[in-house]
Length: 486
Ligand code: NAP
Image (cartoon, rainbow, N blue to C red):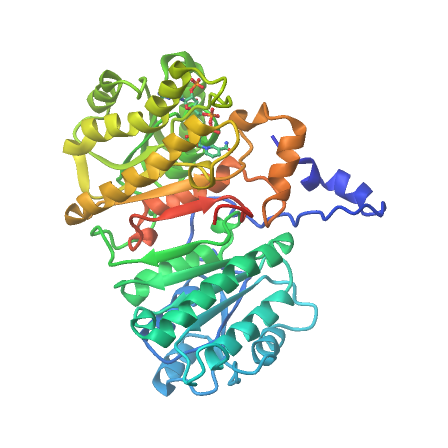
């Protein structure tokens, strides 16, 4: 399944026709399994190097392969020495000036350098007394001005340290930064450039840095406008490759669509994956397993209807003594306006999309290993609602609340629980939508395009692994930066 506006032949023709259609930028996605140098071929401009968080961000980006340039006129000299010894460059520059960051971005590559640029900006409290117009808000303008002029597939990451919101002035700056980001991601999307806010909430600097690396690179190409709280790392996994080696994972509803893509992706990162789906999808499930095995991965199929407690118990019996990663993905739609909806379809959608997660959780809790990760599939419709989807939206909103409860309940066991809220993803579920609805859904995204099951799979794999150790109780939209429901 593909989108016509990304087909090179269609694009070649449209280029010569003066139509008022803005064509999307093809996204630079990750090819192959997660490696150590996923930021190779990217330039990263970091606007500050004064504390341990700044240093960890620089080091994380450099270790992942980015060519890092530090643009700070008054950095910590010891940190600069460490960074330069590790191959980073320091270009002293006043990032307070509107053109300061832009000048560094331009000087970080030769003329015509088309490597994507990542700007990482630490948002700090203002030193001026004016709560509105001050050095901190001027710097926001400066980074935005620079980001607006970089080439395709860039990234702008705004990083908020944990002390920022402890002062009144800092809290105002944090709010301004989040509002700025919500506009900027809409503005930069057509170029394939994305914007995110990362808030350090008791997380160690390296824990924040591993989230920043994910959002700076090709694994997150379809994500934009995320605003994440990064807490203390949970789990005892110190990382390394393969990231999910020796882990056992279950993906429900994985015979096809997003679930199949997630199963394949987890297996590529080393997990032994249990592919679940209903009995009638057994053949498609066997094909998913065969693809994983052909690629050298480990997988098995377990037929079970997760909307029943018996189905969940059958999964537990098949999996055996331990599971580390559970991706609650199975889901259905039965769209009707409330006037025409039957009680049967109201209940069915709630039972499959929401109740099934509780069934599987109840069955697997005794064998869920310490340091495990749960990922629950919601939808942007669970956040924003949608005409004719009251049952679906109710179920997907319930999923968000469920994950928050599990995150709190399982913190002591080092288990994390997060939600993915996909937007418009090309699968069989969306294939039957009328053409006009599909085109409208695309136009509502900042990136002007639908996502692929692989985009959701990258995110699920990230959340399952050690790089997301600081994320729990979070809702991550995978929607190309949708215009509504932020
Ligand atoms: P899909 O192509 O319809 O695949 C869903 C799979 O779940 C199917 O193989 C389905 O089997 C299986 N399933 C349904 N009920 C089940 C049950 N009781 N027990 C076990 N398996 C069951 O859907 P998708 O597009 O990949 O969506 C995957 C998830 O993402 C869903 O939760 C969906 O709500 C969510 N989502 C998707 C989009 C999107 O744009 N595609 C957007 C937002 C959220 P059968 O169909 O063969 O019964």
